[in-house]
Length: 594
Image 1 (spheres, rainbow, N blue to C red):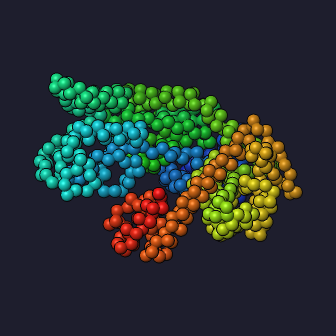
Image 2 (cartoon, rainbow, N blue to C red; image 1 turned 120 degrees about the vertical axis):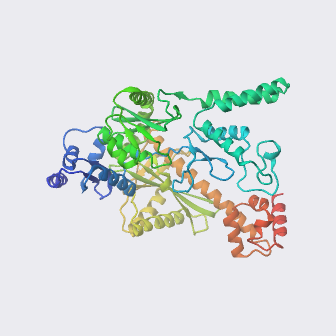
Image 3 (cartoon, helix red, strand yellow; image 1 turned 180 degrees about the horizontal axis):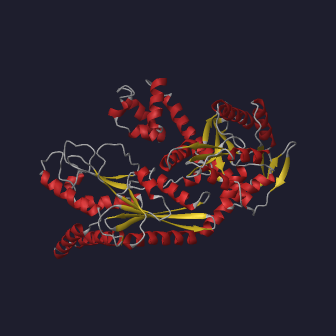
């Protein structure tokens, strides 16, 4: 009741001006950032009427809000995206997109090379000849291989002192030793650029000519190879043509709505053809026009090159996006461009119709299973869970791992590894050290606290974890997982005094806990293997004369494994150890592997 009165009073003071708002939960954590043309109207809409889906869940967690008034809607849009980036709010995370597309770069060097690039550094100088995006790295590499097969460009990063294999098989002109006519290089560049822009005619004719010549000379093996290249172009690279054939690079966005979800489709049109499409389905929290505009604004933050023109549905604020992205954004109302937007809308609808069952099933496995756990434990809030596991080999190479689940899904950026100082088989001692180190740092650095801690062990480990947290003045619930005689989880351990809550092995909750256990176990075991491998090499190097602590650390840092040291060239090794020590080191390591 106090929360409602507080919000009501605060709403009465909000002006109807453009700006951004920040929703907070009971811990003062920002859980959502939005923008509005009229702040008062937009904020008031959250606290009146009935809401559904993710919006209802968001509203149930809001206990306070802040807002920032700005002078224009473009300014509020920029501020909104910056605030999302800064605070990474729980409900804005839904906009995250890890999709990164590969491009082909024709370098601007004197003798150019063809490269497949994914992480585009837009601030790098002379990055002007990028073509794509391609559906995946394999498609981009196949295209580069095709062009390298047809055009003898430079393949090496640096110029060698003598021609390499590519020269001898006719795929390089030997630029390192031969003088090549610059005009010939320019002609090759022009034809490659034409091809990468979607005009395959020149290369197709060239391959056909070579194929018939090889066939007439009864060189059927070469003719077959060329036929396969031709099929690759005709089947794989020829994309769906669109009615606009003006060779302008453009992206086209469409959308569809179904039961609280927004489906977004983007076509990448290059050279008058659709070279790739991107699909995304997100739960709706805001108005559809706000969600779509925000998504398009964020879409170009992650390694997606801006085209010359963007076509969008008419619900999108084109002026705002044009100002923000600094490219032409159009919402066509008729004609050919409108037809392409309609086609993107239809594809968005088909995508959500096909995937809606999978989305709801995933919700049951994650969000609903997490809610079930929250209800069983009688908790008001369960957003973040931290799970711990330990691993050692007869007391040696003692490690612990922590994985994090947020809203039912693993948050891999938050995983942590711990190399335990206690070098003996003592699970309780390990648990005591790792819990203290983790939550002392949470306190010291003011990190986000979990709502729940799970220890993959029994009552003893729970007591240890609770004692450490109590000594730090932290009140975070700790539960354990009890296993049956087949080493399968069959009950939760919780409460004070501790009691068991049986788990149905057919339930979503059981499979949810099982996924968390598997995740933390695999993460910890993989770290244990790394430490064990490194520890073996470390102890081996102690037996080689001439290698002290400093040199040992440098070798470990650079090579990590015995095989890498054996295969390292002597010229590289002598930068770390004396030349006279190298033969003894390699002989010792080779004998060790026999």
